[in-house]
Length: 129
Image (cartoon, rainbow, N blue to C red):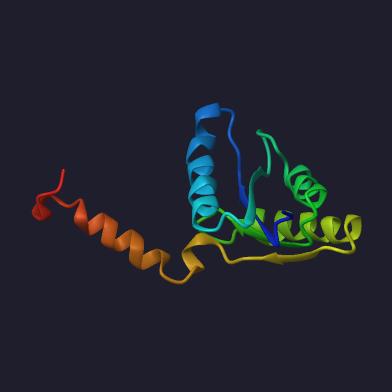
């Protein structure tokens, strides 16, 4: 079955190969919540796959509706400049595909509250270790 839609988790990348593990766990969590959605990680630099490679992988699966989730806390130059440029290039390379950039993590509904709740659960006064 061809996935109806795809999500690319787009992160910076690092020289440390272990740095990608949390992004892979996030991808698995998203896949588990919706097995009909194709989910791929992608990196701006230093790691593979690149965003163009992840897009090509989804397009090869027949996905024609791709959302890019910038796994960045805030919308700095990597999101406002680099991601915007990469999306313009993707739209030119794949004219039949619909692309959407989702908000950065701090702007996603519920994310700041979830982080605050998790942090407060871990404080010494909560009794949690």
